[in-house]
View 1 (cartoon, rainbow, N blue to C red):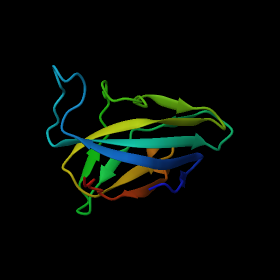
View 2: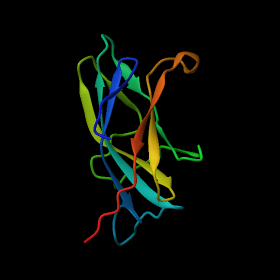
View 3: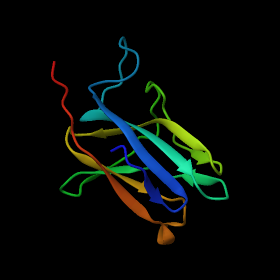
Length: 131
């Protein structure tokens, strides 16, 4: 976490992670199947053309994957699900997953066609905050 990782023209940096038991309005909270994980990322386009930022996944040590949730209303700084980044532009925001609490790696992708796509993993160890 914290180190830039490049896939094609896109450079990803994981800045922070947070786990939640619920999100949204406390009077009518949205509840996960497991736990909500928000990942604060930045994505920079180092290419010369506008690039799409594809949906991302997290992977645990047993290689079980969890897809990014497409509707993260209620998450502060939500990056959105359909996103593009212009040349030399950087996007900052949070993405959302529903997964059991644990250590994960974020699988990041470039915006190439699936058969030509490059990917990388960014390790996100579980950090428990103690009072």
